[in-house]
Image 1 (tube, rainbow, N blue to C red):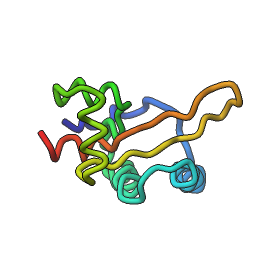
Image 2: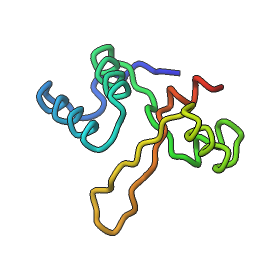
Image 3: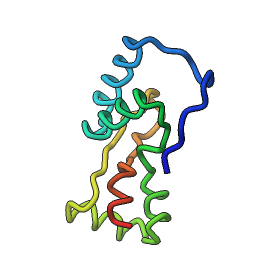
Image 4: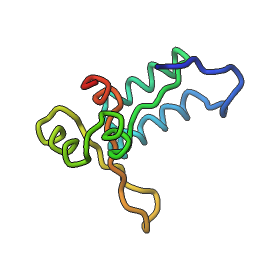
Length: 104
């Protein structure tokens, strides 16, 4: 459930800085519709979780990771591989929360 942003919390960024962040999200593999949702939520002052780790999505849906990957293969869920900023870290696989909620 989305929550309103509490005034005067978090960093104060300019619109240009936010647009740079949105561009980086797309560059790093976030689906375009999820980035647009983040952009709309920012304008409306809403905060929410936009993506889930594979293990968290599986736990939320009550499925094994294997069953979750079958849903991905069937096209029911999208999965993005987000490359790490650091060389020694593995890329992270994330699923849009809106896809998971659509299955629930």
